[in-house]
Image 1 (spheres, rainbow, N blue to C red):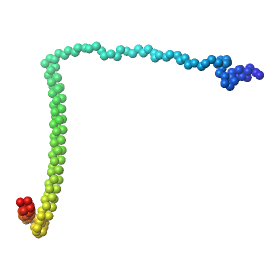
Image 2: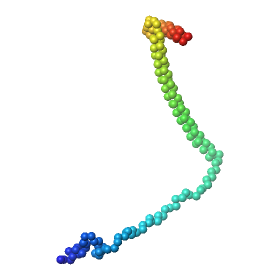
Image 3: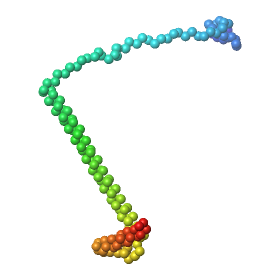
Image 4: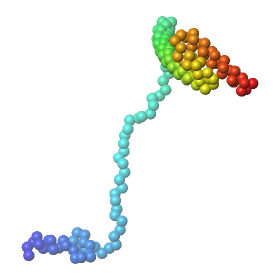
Length: 158
């Protein structure tokens, strides 16, 4: 056998044996010893807040006038924007109330017409109230239908 085969034969262990550095190991296996690793020392700059500083301001009449002008302009702009927003909101509210009142008036008119139609004893009056050419005639028959309705209600509850 040549030298390579001999070294290879020497490195193989028989089955069931443990070899370390070409020697049979017969001792009990203990816990492996791992080296203790600690984090490296970090040198951070001092992050504490700076020491308390005193700030003193001397306000002269000239600087006071400048401050008042700046604050006055800011407040004026702020209140103008509030007024503009309030006016826009008021206009939207007026528009919404107008639409709602129109809708309620239309529904109330239809309800009143239904009540008058159901309380009507004379179909001719209803026809003239709805289809007369002149407003004066329509008004006359509407008044007659209303009087007829009030008489019937007074008789029922009176």
